[in-house]
Image (cartoon, rainbow, N blue to C red; front, side, top):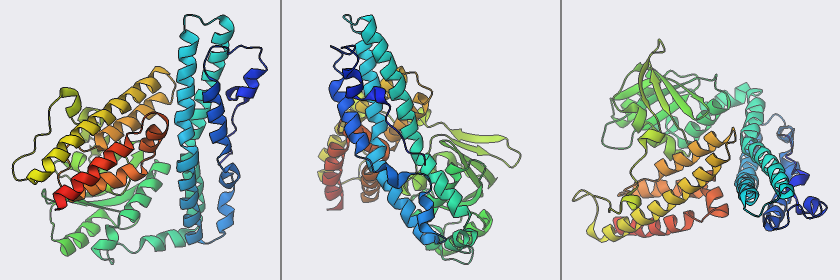
Length: 396
Protein backbone atom coordinates (compact mmCIF):
# COMPACT_ATOMS: atom_id res chain seq x y z
CA UNK A 1 0.00 0.00 0.00
CA UNK A 2 1.22 3.57 -0.60
CA UNK A 3 2.92 5.06 2.45
CA UNK A 4 0.62 7.58 4.11
CA UNK A 5 2.32 10.94 4.64
CA UNK A 6 1.36 13.32 7.43
CA UNK A 7 0.49 16.70 5.86
CA UNK A 8 2.68 19.56 7.07
CA UNK A 9 -0.50 21.44 8.03
CA UNK A 10 -1.11 18.84 10.74
CA UNK A 11 2.17 19.54 12.55
CA UNK A 12 2.77 22.15 15.25
CA UNK A 13 6.04 23.26 13.65
CA UNK A 14 4.16 24.34 10.52
CA UNK A 15 1.90 26.67 12.48
CA UNK A 16 4.71 27.98 14.64
CA UNK A 17 5.96 29.71 11.49
CA UNK A 18 2.58 31.29 10.73
CA UNK A 19 2.82 34.25 13.10
CA UNK A 20 0.30 33.14 15.70
CA UNK A 21 -2.59 32.21 13.43
CA UNK A 22 -3.54 29.45 15.86
CA UNK A 23 -3.09 31.47 19.04
CA UNK A 24 -5.87 30.63 21.47
CA UNK A 25 -7.15 27.73 19.38
CA UNK A 26 -5.90 25.14 21.87
CA UNK A 27 -4.77 22.73 19.16
CA UNK A 28 -1.04 22.47 20.00
CA UNK A 29 -1.29 19.28 22.05
CA UNK A 30 -3.55 17.58 19.51
CA UNK A 31 -1.15 18.41 16.65
CA UNK A 32 1.87 17.15 18.58
CA UNK A 33 0.07 13.95 19.60
CA UNK A 34 -0.97 13.17 16.03
CA UNK A 35 2.56 13.70 14.71
CA UNK A 36 4.13 11.57 17.44
CA UNK A 37 1.74 8.67 16.82
CA UNK A 38 2.13 8.95 13.05
CA UNK A 39 5.91 8.74 13.40
CA UNK A 40 5.45 5.71 15.65
CA UNK A 41 4.14 3.63 12.74
CA UNK A 42 6.71 1.54 10.86
CA UNK A 43 5.49 2.74 7.46
CA UNK A 44 8.34 1.15 5.43
CA UNK A 45 7.06 -2.31 6.42
CA UNK A 46 3.68 -1.42 4.93
CA UNK A 47 5.05 0.08 1.72
CA UNK A 48 3.80 -1.12 -1.65
CA UNK A 49 5.52 -4.31 -2.74
CA UNK A 50 5.60 -5.96 0.69
CA UNK A 51 4.17 -9.18 -0.81
CA UNK A 52 7.44 -9.82 -2.70
CA UNK A 53 9.10 -10.85 0.56
CA UNK A 54 6.93 -14.01 0.62
CA UNK A 55 8.03 -15.16 -2.82
CA UNK A 56 5.83 -17.99 -4.15
CA UNK A 57 5.04 -19.41 -0.71
CA UNK A 58 1.33 -19.01 0.13
CA UNK A 59 1.87 -19.85 3.80
CA UNK A 60 4.55 -17.18 4.13
CA UNK A 61 2.35 -14.68 2.31
CA UNK A 62 -0.57 -15.31 4.68
CA UNK A 63 1.67 -15.13 7.75
CA UNK A 64 3.21 -11.87 6.53
CA UNK A 65 -0.22 -10.42 5.78
CA UNK A 66 -1.52 -11.34 9.23
CA UNK A 67 1.51 -9.68 10.84
CA UNK A 68 1.09 -6.47 8.82
CA UNK A 69 -2.69 -6.47 9.31
CA UNK A 70 -2.15 -6.58 13.07
CA UNK A 71 0.53 -3.89 12.86
CA UNK A 72 -1.82 -1.62 10.93
CA UNK A 73 -4.76 -2.19 13.27
CA UNK A 74 -2.68 -1.53 16.39
CA UNK A 75 -0.51 1.35 15.20
CA UNK A 76 -2.05 2.96 12.11
CA UNK A 77 -5.84 2.54 12.38
CA UNK A 78 -6.08 4.60 15.61
CA UNK A 79 -4.71 7.59 13.67
CA UNK A 80 -8.07 7.86 11.89
CA UNK A 81 -9.91 8.68 15.10
CA UNK A 82 -7.02 10.90 16.24
CA UNK A 83 -7.27 12.96 13.05
CA UNK A 84 -11.06 13.07 13.27
CA UNK A 85 -10.81 14.35 16.84
CA UNK A 86 -8.36 17.02 15.68
CA UNK A 87 -10.77 18.11 12.95
CA UNK A 88 -13.60 18.30 15.49
CA UNK A 89 -11.46 20.40 17.85
CA UNK A 90 -10.47 22.70 14.98
CA UNK A 91 -14.12 23.12 14.02
CA UNK A 92 -14.97 24.17 17.58
CA UNK A 93 -12.00 26.56 17.71
CA UNK A 94 -13.12 28.19 14.45
CA UNK A 95 -16.63 28.72 15.80
CA UNK A 96 -15.50 30.26 19.08
CA UNK A 97 -16.73 33.80 19.70
CA UNK A 98 -13.21 35.20 19.90
CA UNK A 99 -12.06 33.53 16.67
CA UNK A 100 -10.66 36.04 14.20
CA UNK A 101 -10.39 35.42 10.46
CA UNK A 102 -6.76 34.16 10.56
CA UNK A 103 -7.70 31.49 13.10
CA UNK A 104 -10.82 30.51 11.14
CA UNK A 105 -8.81 30.15 7.94
CA UNK A 106 -6.12 28.12 9.73
CA UNK A 107 -8.73 25.83 11.31
CA UNK A 108 -10.46 25.36 7.97
CA UNK A 109 -7.17 24.17 6.48
CA UNK A 110 -6.56 21.81 9.40
CA UNK A 111 -10.08 20.38 9.07
CA UNK A 112 -9.54 19.80 5.35
CA UNK A 113 -6.17 18.09 5.77
CA UNK A 114 -7.21 16.07 8.86
CA UNK A 115 -10.32 14.80 7.09
CA UNK A 116 -8.32 13.73 4.03
CA UNK A 117 -5.68 12.11 6.24
CA UNK A 118 -8.33 10.21 8.23
CA UNK A 119 -9.85 8.99 4.96
CA UNK A 120 -6.47 7.74 3.75
CA UNK A 121 -5.79 5.92 7.01
CA UNK A 122 -9.26 4.39 6.97
CA UNK A 123 -8.65 3.02 3.47
CA UNK A 124 -5.29 1.52 4.42
CA UNK A 125 -6.56 -1.81 5.71
CA UNK A 126 -8.56 -2.41 2.56
CA UNK A 127 -5.53 -1.46 0.42
CA UNK A 128 -3.39 -3.92 2.38
CA UNK A 129 -6.03 -6.61 1.96
CA UNK A 130 -6.31 -5.94 -1.78
CA UNK A 131 -2.56 -6.37 -2.21
CA UNK A 132 -2.73 -9.62 -0.26
CA UNK A 133 -5.64 -10.91 -2.35
CA UNK A 134 -3.93 -9.96 -5.61
CA UNK A 135 -0.79 -11.82 -4.60
CA UNK A 136 -2.82 -14.77 -3.32
CA UNK A 137 -4.75 -15.04 -6.59
CA UNK A 138 -1.43 -15.44 -8.35
CA UNK A 139 -1.04 -18.67 -6.37
CA UNK A 140 -4.27 -20.50 -7.38
CA UNK A 141 -3.05 -23.97 -6.47
CA UNK A 142 -2.05 -22.91 -2.98
CA UNK A 143 -5.29 -21.06 -2.37
CA UNK A 144 -7.58 -23.83 -3.54
CA UNK A 145 -5.57 -26.52 -1.77
CA UNK A 146 -5.92 -24.58 1.45
CA UNK A 147 -9.69 -24.65 1.09
CA UNK A 148 -9.82 -28.42 0.67
CA UNK A 149 -12.28 -30.39 -1.41
CA UNK A 150 -15.43 -29.40 0.47
CA UNK A 151 -17.72 -32.44 0.29
CA UNK A 152 -14.85 -34.79 1.15
CA UNK A 153 -13.97 -32.91 4.32
CA UNK A 154 -15.39 -33.45 7.82
CA UNK A 155 -17.93 -30.96 9.08
CA UNK A 156 -15.49 -29.41 11.56
CA UNK A 157 -13.18 -28.45 8.67
CA UNK A 158 -16.00 -26.92 6.63
CA UNK A 159 -17.20 -25.01 9.71
CA UNK A 160 -13.76 -23.73 10.74
CA UNK A 161 -14.24 -20.05 11.79
CA UNK A 162 -10.84 -19.13 10.33
CA UNK A 163 -11.86 -20.44 6.91
CA UNK A 164 -15.18 -18.59 7.06
CA UNK A 165 -13.42 -15.37 8.03
CA UNK A 166 -10.95 -15.76 5.15
CA UNK A 167 -13.72 -16.24 2.60
CA UNK A 168 -15.68 -13.27 3.94
CA UNK A 169 -12.60 -11.07 3.71
CA UNK A 170 -11.95 -12.17 0.13
CA UNK A 171 -15.56 -11.36 -0.75
CA UNK A 172 -15.34 -7.94 0.86
CA UNK A 173 -12.14 -7.16 -1.06
CA UNK A 174 -13.84 -8.10 -4.34
CA UNK A 175 -17.58 -7.23 -4.54
CA UNK A 176 -17.87 -9.31 -7.74
CA UNK A 177 -16.70 -12.46 -5.95
CA UNK A 178 -19.35 -15.04 -5.05
CA UNK A 179 -18.85 -18.15 -2.94
CA UNK A 180 -21.20 -20.98 -2.09
CA UNK A 181 -22.65 -21.09 1.41
CA UNK A 182 -24.49 -23.59 3.57
CA UNK A 183 -26.46 -22.48 6.62
CA UNK A 184 -27.87 -24.94 9.17
CA UNK A 185 -30.15 -23.97 12.04
CA UNK A 186 -32.15 -26.04 14.52
CA UNK A 187 -33.64 -22.85 16.07
CA UNK A 188 -32.25 -23.88 19.47
CA UNK A 189 -28.47 -23.57 19.29
CA UNK A 190 -26.37 -21.02 17.43
CA UNK A 191 -26.70 -21.60 13.68
CA UNK A 192 -23.80 -22.98 11.59
CA UNK A 193 -22.36 -21.37 8.47
CA UNK A 194 -19.86 -22.67 5.90
CA UNK A 195 -18.53 -20.93 2.78
CA UNK A 196 -16.48 -22.40 -0.04
CA UNK A 197 -15.33 -21.09 -3.45
CA UNK A 198 -15.92 -24.37 -5.34
CA UNK A 199 -18.18 -26.76 -3.40
CA UNK A 200 -21.87 -26.04 -3.87
CA UNK A 201 -24.00 -25.16 -0.88
CA UNK A 202 -26.31 -28.13 -1.35
CA UNK A 203 -23.36 -30.53 -1.11
CA UNK A 204 -21.92 -28.80 1.95
CA UNK A 205 -25.29 -28.77 3.66
CA UNK A 206 -25.77 -32.49 3.02
CA UNK A 207 -22.32 -33.27 4.42
CA UNK A 208 -22.67 -31.09 7.51
CA UNK A 209 -26.24 -32.26 8.13
CA UNK A 210 -25.06 -35.87 8.15
CA UNK A 211 -22.28 -35.11 10.62
CA UNK A 212 -24.13 -32.82 13.06
CA UNK A 213 -27.72 -34.02 12.69
CA UNK A 214 -29.29 -30.68 11.72
CA UNK A 215 -31.51 -30.94 8.64
CA UNK A 216 -33.01 -27.45 8.42
CA UNK A 217 -31.38 -24.40 6.89
CA UNK A 218 -30.54 -22.78 3.58
CA UNK A 219 -27.87 -22.68 0.87
CA UNK A 220 -26.91 -20.64 -2.17
CA UNK A 221 -24.42 -17.93 -3.11
CA UNK A 222 -22.89 -15.25 -0.90
CA UNK A 223 -21.29 -11.92 -1.81
CA UNK A 224 -20.35 -8.72 0.04
CA UNK A 225 -20.51 -5.14 -1.23
CA UNK A 226 -19.14 -2.68 1.31
CA UNK A 227 -20.92 -3.62 4.54
CA UNK A 228 -23.87 -5.34 2.80
CA UNK A 229 -24.10 -9.12 2.78
CA UNK A 230 -26.10 -10.47 -0.17
CA UNK A 231 -27.47 -14.01 -0.16
CA UNK A 232 -28.85 -15.58 -3.34
CA UNK A 233 -30.73 -18.56 -1.98
CA UNK A 234 -31.79 -21.77 -3.63
CA UNK A 235 -33.65 -22.70 -0.46
CA UNK A 236 -35.29 -20.11 1.80
CA UNK A 237 -35.24 -20.37 5.60
CA UNK A 238 -37.26 -18.15 7.96
CA UNK A 239 -35.22 -15.75 10.09
CA UNK A 240 -32.08 -16.25 8.01
CA UNK A 241 -31.31 -12.55 7.57
CA UNK A 242 -31.13 -12.03 11.33
CA UNK A 243 -29.66 -15.28 12.61
CA UNK A 244 -26.87 -15.52 10.02
CA UNK A 245 -25.23 -12.64 11.87
CA UNK A 246 -24.43 -15.01 14.74
CA UNK A 247 -21.82 -17.25 13.05
CA UNK A 248 -20.45 -14.27 11.12
CA UNK A 249 -19.88 -12.32 14.32
CA UNK A 250 -18.36 -15.38 15.99
CA UNK A 251 -15.67 -15.66 13.31
CA UNK A 252 -14.68 -12.03 13.87
CA UNK A 253 -16.29 -10.37 10.83
CA UNK A 254 -18.68 -7.42 10.83
CA UNK A 255 -21.55 -6.73 8.42
CA UNK A 256 -24.29 -4.13 8.10
CA UNK A 257 -27.32 -4.84 5.97
CA UNK A 258 -28.28 -8.42 5.05
CA UNK A 259 -30.15 -8.79 1.76
CA UNK A 260 -31.88 -12.03 0.77
CA UNK A 261 -32.83 -12.50 -2.90
CA UNK A 262 -33.99 -15.37 -5.09
CA UNK A 263 -32.19 -16.61 -8.21
CA UNK A 264 -34.06 -14.00 -10.29
CA UNK A 265 -32.76 -11.19 -8.10
CA UNK A 266 -36.09 -10.42 -6.44
CA UNK A 267 -35.85 -9.39 -2.80
CA UNK A 268 -37.24 -11.97 -0.40
CA UNK A 269 -36.20 -10.45 2.92
CA UNK A 270 -33.71 -8.03 4.41
CA UNK A 271 -32.38 -6.86 7.75
CA UNK A 272 -31.22 -3.26 7.99
CA UNK A 273 -28.76 -3.15 10.83
CA UNK A 274 -29.58 0.40 11.97
CA UNK A 275 -33.25 -0.45 12.26
CA UNK A 276 -32.52 -3.75 13.96
CA UNK A 277 -30.63 -2.25 16.88
CA UNK A 278 -31.48 -3.51 20.31
CA UNK A 279 -32.97 -1.29 23.05
CA UNK A 280 -30.64 0.76 25.20
CA UNK A 281 -31.57 -0.31 28.71
CA UNK A 282 -29.42 2.33 30.32
CA UNK A 283 -31.27 5.17 28.59
CA UNK A 284 -34.65 3.94 29.71
CA UNK A 285 -33.45 3.27 33.23
CA UNK A 286 -34.83 -0.26 33.20
CA UNK A 287 -33.02 -3.43 34.16
CA UNK A 288 -32.69 -6.41 31.82
CA UNK A 289 -35.65 -8.75 31.92
CA UNK A 290 -34.28 -12.26 32.21
CA UNK A 291 -36.88 -15.04 32.03
CA UNK A 292 -36.94 -17.23 35.11
CA UNK A 293 -34.59 -20.19 34.95
CA UNK A 294 -32.35 -18.82 32.17
CA UNK A 295 -29.63 -17.52 34.49
CA UNK A 296 -28.51 -18.33 38.02
CA UNK A 297 -29.77 -15.90 40.69
CA UNK A 298 -26.20 -15.11 41.76
CA UNK A 299 -25.47 -13.77 38.29
CA UNK A 300 -28.33 -11.25 38.22
CA UNK A 301 -26.36 -8.41 39.92
CA UNK A 302 -23.65 -8.76 37.28
CA UNK A 303 -26.23 -8.81 34.49
CA UNK A 304 -27.58 -5.56 35.90
CA UNK A 305 -24.04 -4.18 36.05
CA UNK A 306 -23.62 -5.18 32.39
CA UNK A 307 -26.78 -3.24 31.48
CA UNK A 308 -25.24 -0.12 33.05
CA UNK A 309 -21.77 -0.34 31.48
CA UNK A 310 -23.29 -1.30 28.14
CA UNK A 311 -25.55 1.74 28.32
CA UNK A 312 -22.57 3.96 29.09
CA UNK A 313 -20.68 2.49 26.15
CA UNK A 314 -23.64 3.01 23.80
CA UNK A 315 -23.90 6.64 24.93
CA UNK A 316 -20.20 7.16 24.21
CA UNK A 317 -20.41 5.46 20.82
CA UNK A 318 -23.41 7.54 19.79
CA UNK A 319 -21.58 10.69 20.89
CA UNK A 320 -18.59 9.80 18.73
CA UNK A 321 -20.90 8.97 15.82
CA UNK A 322 -22.59 12.36 16.18
CA UNK A 323 -19.25 14.19 16.10
CA UNK A 324 -18.18 12.30 13.00
CA UNK A 325 -21.52 12.94 11.28
CA UNK A 326 -21.22 16.67 11.97
CA UNK A 327 -17.99 16.78 9.96
CA UNK A 328 -20.12 16.04 6.86
CA UNK A 329 -17.26 14.21 5.20
CA UNK A 330 -18.00 11.68 2.42
CA UNK A 331 -16.58 8.96 4.69
CA UNK A 332 -18.70 9.99 7.68
CA UNK A 333 -21.67 7.77 6.77
CA UNK A 334 -19.46 4.67 6.57
CA UNK A 335 -17.86 5.45 9.93
CA UNK A 336 -21.27 5.95 11.56
CA UNK A 337 -22.42 2.57 10.19
CA UNK A 338 -19.31 0.92 11.66
CA UNK A 339 -20.04 2.44 15.07
CA UNK A 340 -23.68 1.37 14.84
CA UNK A 341 -22.45 -2.17 14.17
CA UNK A 342 -20.55 -2.09 17.47
CA UNK A 343 -23.73 -1.06 19.31
CA UNK A 344 -25.61 -3.97 17.77
CA UNK A 345 -22.86 -6.43 18.62
CA UNK A 346 -23.01 -5.53 22.33
CA UNK A 347 -25.56 -8.16 23.33
CA UNK A 348 -28.20 -6.74 25.68
CA UNK A 349 -28.51 -9.84 27.87
CA UNK A 350 -25.56 -12.25 27.64
CA UNK A 351 -26.79 -15.11 29.81
CA UNK A 352 -24.66 -18.04 28.66
CA UNK A 353 -20.91 -18.69 28.92
CA UNK A 354 -20.78 -18.94 25.13
CA UNK A 355 -22.39 -15.52 24.59
CA UNK A 356 -20.03 -13.96 27.12
CA UNK A 357 -16.96 -15.59 25.57
CA UNK A 358 -18.00 -14.28 22.14
CA UNK A 359 -18.37 -10.75 23.52
CA UNK A 360 -14.92 -10.93 25.11
CA UNK A 361 -13.36 -12.07 21.81
CA UNK A 362 -15.18 -9.29 19.96
CA UNK A 363 -14.07 -6.56 22.39
CA UNK A 364 -10.50 -7.85 22.25
CA UNK A 365 -10.06 -7.41 18.50
CA UNK A 366 -12.63 -5.01 17.04
CA UNK A 367 -10.72 -2.03 15.66
CA UNK A 368 -13.59 0.45 16.18
CA UNK A 369 -13.83 -0.51 19.87
CA UNK A 370 -10.06 -0.15 20.24
CA UNK A 371 -10.04 3.25 18.50
CA UNK A 372 -12.86 4.68 20.61
CA UNK A 373 -11.31 3.33 23.81
CA UNK A 374 -7.91 4.85 23.06
CA UNK A 375 -8.91 8.27 21.75
CA UNK A 376 -12.40 9.08 23.05
CA UNK A 377 -13.33 7.16 26.18
CA UNK A 378 -12.27 3.74 27.44
CA UNK A 379 -15.45 1.72 26.92
CA UNK A 380 -13.55 -1.57 26.64
CA UNK A 381 -12.10 -1.93 30.17
CA UNK A 382 -15.39 -1.64 32.14
CA UNK A 383 -17.17 -3.92 29.67
CA UNK A 384 -14.51 -6.62 29.96
CA UNK A 385 -14.40 -6.29 33.76
CA UNK A 386 -18.13 -6.94 34.13
CA UNK A 387 -18.05 -9.74 31.56
CA UNK A 388 -15.33 -11.50 33.58
CA UNK A 389 -17.51 -11.30 36.70
CA UNK A 390 -20.63 -12.39 34.79
CA UNK A 391 -18.83 -15.32 33.18
CA UNK A 392 -17.65 -16.56 36.58
CA UNK A 393 -21.17 -16.27 37.98
CA UNK A 394 -22.97 -18.09 35.16
CA UNK A 395 -20.31 -20.83 35.07
CA UNK A 396 -20.40 -21.51 38.83
